[in-house]
Image 1 (spheres, one colour):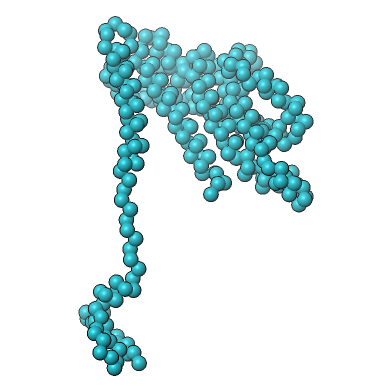
Image 2 (cartoon, helix red, strand yellow):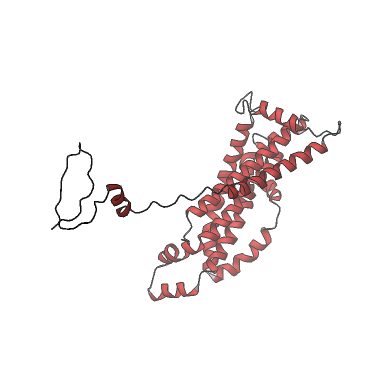
Length: 303
């Protein structure tokens, strides 16, 4: 029979005694703990090589671009500012990006926000119209055959060709710019959503018919999960197009916005600010695309 011995917490833990009637030696508590407790998993070393391979190529690419830029501006009188001159101008510019000295003299921060506001309104309206229209076109063959020629005709039209129509209809620059964003960003969402609906396996729809599911159930339970990757791809393409178009539209319409700011700086022959605006436009577009890619991964149904 094995006896159990209880000790006070204040006393040191004795060694485990051997069973009565045996000559086995006593086992130390550390040995018992080592046998009973599972071994700790070995900590995997940090992948410095993978981090280096991720960081080094972009840094080298950026350095190569700045080096070529510096070489092109060595000769004085070229008119293109050097990287150092552009950097000094950027430091001064972003020291107070939200100043206001009047309706036509505002900081670059306000101009970016106004442009993003127009993009958000035009892109949001395009999503409200384009995504449901894509589902309808992909779901119903008759409507697909009726609308597809119109889409094929209007999709290649340059976005700026729609700007005079907006000015004619709305009699104002701001809604005309929003209209231009709407009409140019709707097509990728319509086309990609319709293609996604058409590529849903027919077996899924046959099961829905057997189960006598309503059209709403078919849309929410079958079509939407299958079409979501195509739809988000169209959304990502559309927001990139919208951000491209707003710069050109604001150059023509004037007012407040990053496009108008670039054109105004050109009229002032401030080339440093134009180069800074090019980088800012690229960074904002990159952030918009990365945000939508993160959203796509967040709502992905793939496990």
